[in-house]
Image 1 (cartoon, helix red, strand yellow):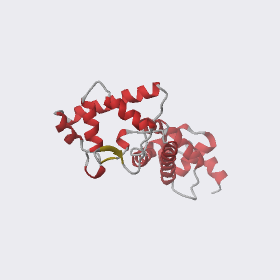
Image 2 (cartoon, rainbow, N blue to C red; image 1 turned 135 degrees about the vertical axis):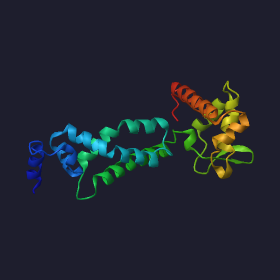
Image 3 (cartoon, one colour; image 1 turned 90 degrees about the horizontal axis):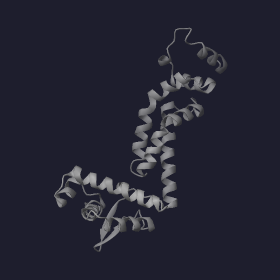
Image 4 (cartoon, rainbow, N blue to C red; image 1 turned 180 degrees about the horizontal axis):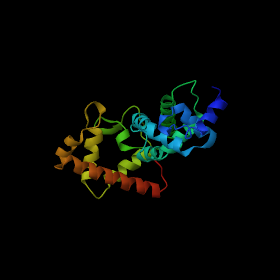
Length: 216
């Protein structure tokens, strides 16, 4: 069947008793391309949101800031829509096409972060300890933003914070992050209590630096 005939068939598929759920991914993308068919888009989103989220977790969680991951997550439906418009069934399955598109988005943002060297996400940076001084892993160089963060931690009103960050980021084995359970034992707190203090501090520091117009 030619593409033109196929599109005509798709336009009249409800009359023929065919449900949107019965259509292939290719047929759904054809409907979206031809008429911005909302039901077709919703069906495509329903089928492939899981793939989008999985790729974001795999390629974004460990290299992007929480805000960047959140922004990409918010764009999920629009990205699937764009993927449908760009889809060429002769090159790959739609699921593969979407997975590659999501992966590319994450890696592109990661490259921007690396080139600009203006982003820092505490859990995404691996630290190690050398000569009893705070030294980032060879993959990360100390920059102004990092120094500013350390300074804010050291001067924070909650004195537990300095010990918490030191234990979490500098005292792990082989340069890895120390498990929260072990950090908690140093502070005589629960693991969740440490996480709460940690996350609250990150929000405060992010807000302070953003207000000072220093991006990291």
